[in-house]
View 1: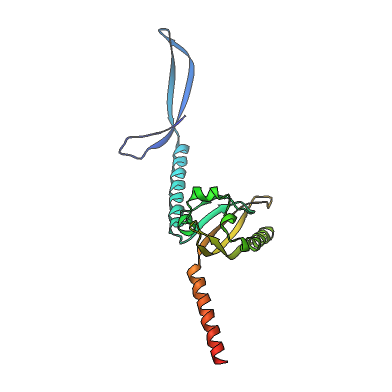
View 2: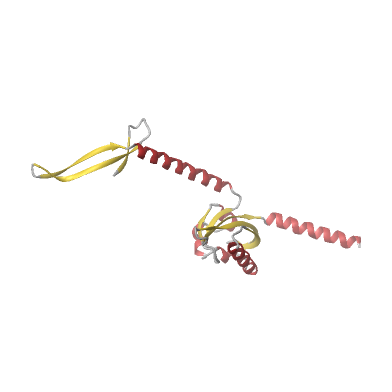
Amino acid sequence: IRLLAGPTAQPPRLITLNLKVGPLMEQGFASFQIDALPSVQDDGLLASQRELVESRRQFDSVLNCLSGLFYRCETQAPWRMSSVSEGVQALTGYDKTELELKNGWSNIMRAEDREVVEKAVADAVSENRSFELVYRIVRKTGEMRWVSERGHAVYDNEGKPLFLEGVIDDISGRKEADDLQSAIIERWRRTLD
């Protein structure tokens, strides 16, 4: 049995209790003897656990600073998310639970873009390389948004893809500005001709 122990003024430390259980009978009642043996090794384990908690806190903090979302999902469409950052709601209008009910990321993609995205991701996974994609999604409100996705597969020791990880950003404003710039340039060219 492991317990956290220590005076309240000091940080707790992990101790190991060795239980000696035997039929110690005193006045007709069974009793147990407990010896508490502090373990230096357990103090190291506690320090490792604290470092892990702090590392997770830092990771979560970085994820929450992203303008888009970080994800982990299946390697093939419909790309059900096993992990997605809080940015999912700002980008899609869906919270994490609602996105799960949509049964995968591909189900909020514009139908015209799905096949191209599926092929690009499958090619990248089979070639063990990263991918960068631009495509459209449909928000919960029905509004269409342009997104940029950068990701890669994570593989096991035998080279089998386990899942995809990546970042998806809303680039609708940039895309609209590029389209407007192209239209202005085209109009200018026609005027000069």
